[in-house]
Image (cartoon, rainbow, N blue to C red):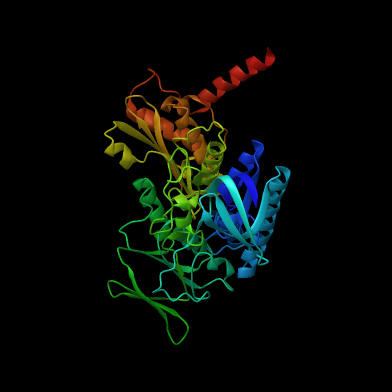
Length: 489
């Protein structure tokens, strides 16, 4: 039986980052992946596919140009499911090739098969060819990810009534779609298909959606969705889903309302893929959603040499944070110094429009009793927004009145997931409102919204320097003068 310093079960973002980190520390590493190819949920059914689908939909539909050319503008008149899939397959192949090369370059061994515990240090692996082998390790990391939650009362058929994994295999773009669940996955797919001019209805049992996002951002986002005729039904549960004699899907809600559509996407949560691991043999137990509880600093489970990272440990379930969790867990597992997880990380929702946030929401600031002020900028206030034809988009920053420090940045609109990193850097470096008003941003860019929002907050706060910095040609001339002087010397 082969023994390793670290065995990683699952090759998603957490697993692959952990494996490569341990290998770089010259430890023997084995990755076990039961999928057809390495990459895990992130590469094959989650992060990469959904974001590729989004980009393809926006490109082919001409969505980004409709501000100039009208709502009827399309790059490709008839968009098929094959059109959406073509770019997806190319992207996935590239992702897998990069990952396999990383494993090879760092001498990470990997095998295809399904693993389960026989004792806390030993795993039995049933390989895809039927061979059964046993491997052991000093430390084990579980990064098995999640799969869609599929309640028994939903008659999934893989064609008209589907989950988020099956959505990638649809035969045609539906003319109408009901999305059950207004979480991140449900909202992303709902808005992507709305951009393809599919008639979309979202049903959510809660009274609102995306409760962890700043309320003002959610309100702006909700307005944009309703403005383009998406139907959002809150506070209602799905009592029954069935197909009528014409093949249409029929949904009964708790208020007796009946909805009909060509396709139903059930996206109400995900389950940790831990049911095949035989956790009791390792002394572990998952919760009702198949997730594992871990120490938030080391990612150790209740069994000290067994770690878990990624979606299987729950919120925030982001590829970016999962990678960092895997890296920290691997370093701790092999006895190397490990830094604490970052206090503030960006959260990105790749809907149409994008939402991204970092730091405290206004609701959290109020709850903590912090005196604060906000600064707001609309993308239409920037020259870059005019060039791009944007009439929507909002950037909001929250500052402490006492320290003037940035407490949170929240963005909804085109490029939000890229723009947020400026705010993230200032936030983690404990920067203040003065950074945004005193520094120069490239012109014309959407990043100028930071200066506009900074000046908005600066004016409202009424503290700091005696004279407010100006965001006009005067400050630009001054900066250029300094630059010319430096260049000539």
